[in-house]
Length: 97
Image (cartoon, rainbow, N blue to C red; front, side):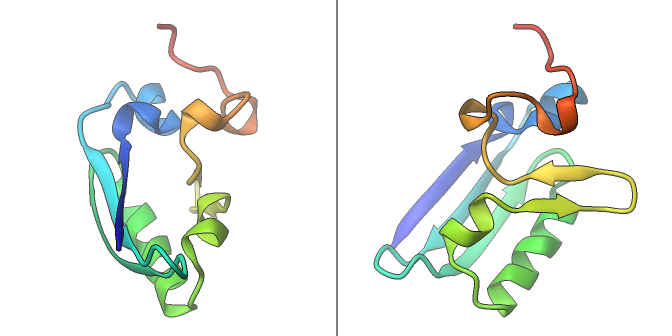
């Protein structure tokens, strides 16, 4: 097993909302990539945990979920950390450092 951690400072929407407190963690089978569970604390975690739960029910592995674009009635999230993105999602501006 492996614990995957993403600090909220790496989540683009958290920077946009100036709410970078928290972390996302998932427990993943190191051999298969199967997502075994997760705990999300931070900005808009409810929407992401719902999508993560659906991915788990659908049998998606961590690698498949990682690059997914999660949609909501009025927002979009990328599950890939901001440090690996070349630009903010949908061309939005990032918070200056």
